Length: 323
Image (cartoon, rainbow, N blue to C red; front, side, top):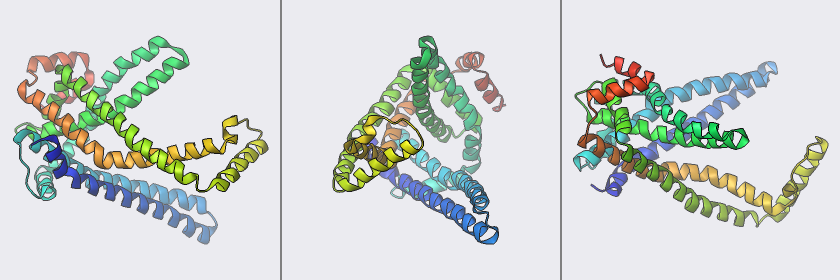
């Protein structure tokens, strides 16, 4: 199966995960607002009710993330793994994904439990790259470090997806052992890692450029339909800054700039949703394919994993769980 054929099959998982996340946000907001009005009417302490509602809502969102969103994510990765390793997928991937997740629920739950340890291993890459920012020093160095950290966080999420795919593939291994093998594959196959980095950030940048640019342009055009509203907004910003004795840049006096900024911010928000729904699953498919092919062709040996243990205490601790 090609990446595109696999992508079409697993897209329903992404759509359902998005709907679950959207519904969770609505419910959390509803609980928080409900807490505010209940507390306000009962004891005139709406803020306390809002805070309590937010806490309850956040606990609920965490439970949803653990027991619903992660299940669909695991099902999607299971189907990607099968598609790229076996070359076939059933017609109803949702049903098959749910079946596999149910069948291997303990292993999957254990994987998410050790995800923190896996992220710790991969963050070593970030610490090595951060030396670049430290070497430069000053504000420029801090900016470089911040940018690198942002890139590393994105990369880590994909690496963890690949490790979960490896857990599905290595059915004969326990979760921690398979996760260790998955982590070791990245350290062993540098070319695969850099090829995946190119795919992740190259396609991500192209997605942002095309989709984000189109959304910004469309938003900028819509804003021009309401010029008086932005004239008023500009005046209010200037007046608020004046009352607060806050110096603001002269660009805020320019309504065209305000239109662009608002259009750009909304475009980023919408792009993030669209990218996560339609572009990221395609990137994940290619990344997992590269990873699986490298691992299947040349698995890490015990000696190679022992060498990684010497360099990474977190990796060594994770391997102890395989005993």
